[in-house]
Amino acid sequence: MVLKPPLPLFMDDVVRLRKPHPCGSYEWVVVRLGADIGLKCRTCGRRVLLPRRTVEKRLKEFVSRGSDATAEPTAPGLPQVQDQGPDQ
Ligand SMILES: [Zn+2]
Image (cartoon, rainbow, N blue to C red; front, side, top):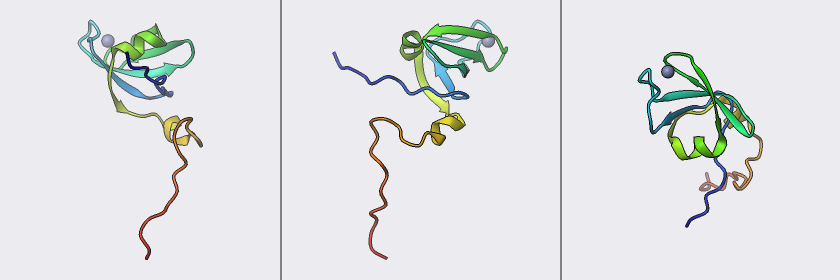
């Protein structure tokens, strides 16, 4: 068993799930965060609430990240980016 860190989910993230919605779409937009994750179908606009664990299990990939993902000042577990590039 490999322990995975909690999946970082942000508002407006677009995710692709393993199983399609009945309308045929695989892509969902994150519209609510919390113990339950609110997802809105990109094709038919239907909203669902899924437990975070279920979302993590069904998630296949991120299609795009919401603005909050990049606005996060210090993501936990990630080292601060320090520019130590080659000398100029
Ligand atoms: Zn749908």
